[in-house]
Length: 362
Image (cartoon, rainbow, N blue to C red; front, side, top):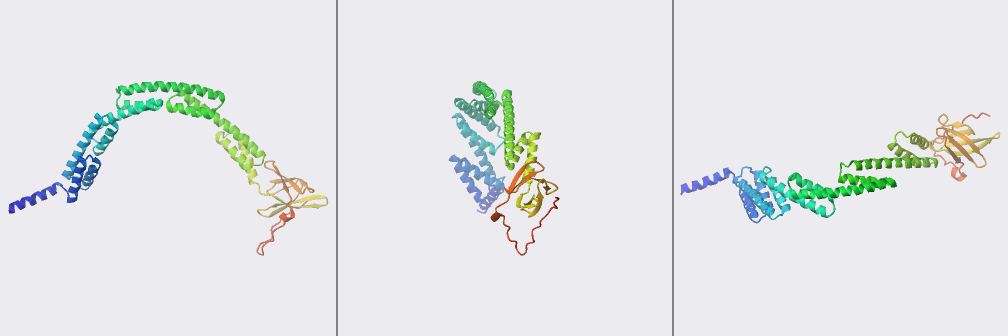
């Protein structure tokens, strides 16, 4: 009796040392076996992997993994015989995830994939999409260069592709004659999607892009001129800068950019008063931002060593014509109505606004 107990204890200890695992592991292995019998390889794999992560030498788990791989291989063969290539590929990919060195599985997976590529090529050909058909047929031939059905589809697809390219090239020439370079660009890109090595399509694309850029440049330059002449300097600057992106050497665009920036940099001017002294009209020009004032007569320049010139003073219209010396542009500033031009009473803390007067020579 004592001997029997000793043998049982010895066997239990031996199994534990060999890697049978804990009671929880054995329960998970039983679930894995049951799942595999029911065709649920996912549960069997997950349970077995969980055990092996904890105990890589657990011989029961290792044996279970071997059974799972054998099951998956047989299942893929059955699917393959039934021409169920999609499921066969999925099963074989699962098997190779467990054992990347399984050469038979690799060979059978390539076989399944080539049939899937062939099916996709045939469907694309039926749907009048020869480029897609050609791509799938060539992938099938990469997997098996001697695959006759794929060669047949490839040949038919190439014929249809060439017919389509010929038609597109004729259309492209018509678009050039019409000057419709946007459509020419799109069409050339379509041809290159079908045949990336098509030199004629590449030439069409270059021509279309060049013409579009040139036309956009001329349109932007025309708009820049128009906006500048209308005094819309922000828009003139934006359009001229667009021209320079295409043609950095454009002298006219550079000039518009500089003159528009000069105009935008001009300070705001205000006519704050007109006075006649000894028959001569004197204008009081104010910069509202700094409240600086200049007493000037007709023909006189002021501000920053001559940025502005008083070109004309009309006492009756109560207006002054100012010329911006850098650009030669002019603006007319009028005396505001009294109710608008009355100064705001300064706060007690505010210092009186400085008045810069110029000595007048009579």
